[in-house]
Length: 212
Image 1 (cartoon, rainbow, N blue to C red):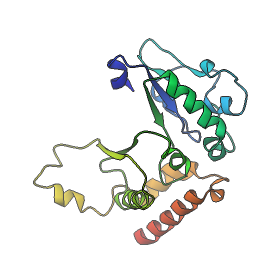
Image 2: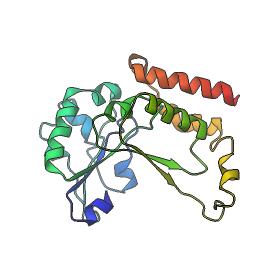
Image 3: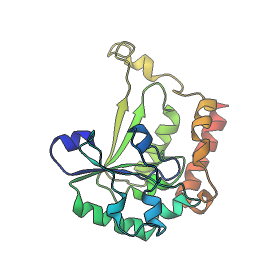
């Protein structure tokens, strides 16, 4: 979002991780009322302009996730969110959306055919390689368009052209106990109602069995 904003393009950073919204905290911005997308979608806020946060430290606009709802998956798939995104497309040159991690719940999947680019941020030596590979395979099967990957946090001293093959053969990047601790809060009561989520849950069970 910052890079787009530096090109003098009107840019919005939109937090659609309604299960664990974190954009405001990561940017160290005040949001005392804890208002955001969720509050708009459930009718607590009528004008989307009231959601927009502007701060002199940043050249882009921000909309937070807001209050954590009991039905985040349902809100992500709602017609009201689609209508909001249509409005925002007309207002901004670029919209960067932060979502829940792909493969844990179906929230991000619900948006993938609506956005222009689907960008995965993969952390070197942390993201589980087998789990991520299974997600990419499924996306290919589903013919999901415009999928790109950024490998982040690469240690240049440990990874070079000479040892890249050895590095890539590591069985996994994150231990299962660490991964479970990170992901446990994303599973909720509505995931069984979503076909895509059920599919990802089956992946996860297969992965855990393989690793055990």
